[in-house]
Amino acid sequence: MDRDRLLATTPLAAAVLWGGMYVVSKWGFDAVPPLTLVFLRVALGALALYPIVRLTTPARSFTRPEWRRLAGLAGWLTAALSTQFVGTELTNASYGSLLTVSTPVFILALGVTALDERLTRHKAGGTLLAAAGTLAVLSGGGGPGGAVRSFTTGTALGVCLLLVSSLCFAAFTVFGKPLVRRYSALEIVTYATVLSVPLFGLLVPLDVVWRPAAFASVSLTLPVVGTVLYLGLLSTAAAWYCWYKGMEYADASSVGVFFFAQPVVGILLGVALLGESIGPGFFLGGALLAAGVYVVTHADESSDGP
Figure 1: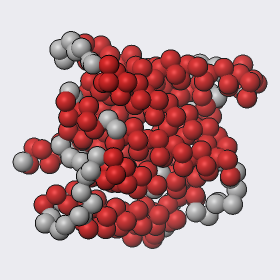
Figure 2 (figure 1 turned 120 degrees about the vertical axis):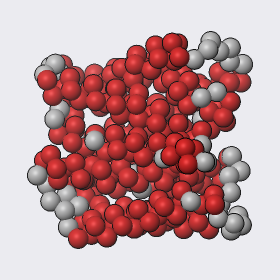
Figure 3 (figure 1 turned 135 degrees about the vertical axis):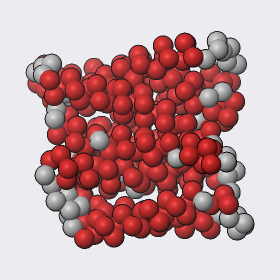
């Protein structure tokens, strides 16, 4: 039981890796057009995952419905990342951090409606508590914490795209759960990633039209190479595996709460590596977030009704 509970927290590792993207972005994120960058990220992630699956798991003969479900996951993934990168391009990283809060809420709602997961008072209350904590962190931290203060600077289209991204990533999380139950997190995230590569590739020409100057001026500097490697190997291959691994041991709605840790980690890394500052709201929000995560991860022990 203790081992299962520990493995159910592996999505926290994914949130830590995603939080690191904030610092990485300072080291070259803006040098590559968004759709090209996301294609490179996913292609590298697929190249890292596929050989591992072939070496460590038996050959599979997926049924047609299972292939359709995997293709659906690839579609949700493509929609989630492309809208996230373009939405951030149209607004700023602060908006992306702020609207991250909506992802676990979407996961909770889809888990209950699509997978018939139980909506206990502990899950609902813990998710709301963690959301409040994350908002407090963002209002009182450095780096992406400027989201609340700069809320008037973005564009409506960018905000809408970021919300669509949150919903699509929630769908990628929830609709992968039935396949994870039958096979494994490693296999499902690998095949979904591989199938999404050509879909992301189809979007790259849009960068040529949208930002021809930026596309033509891309250079392979050390920060750019480091950014792509971090995004592909850590934020994609490692993080997506950790995210799905948690669903082998917990409901999707319980896994979703770990997503709240992403902006917190981003702010802490900004303080440690970029010399940014934090305010008292960060510490209050961090305490609320930790309390909310604790409540949700212990929800299954509760006897409260749906």
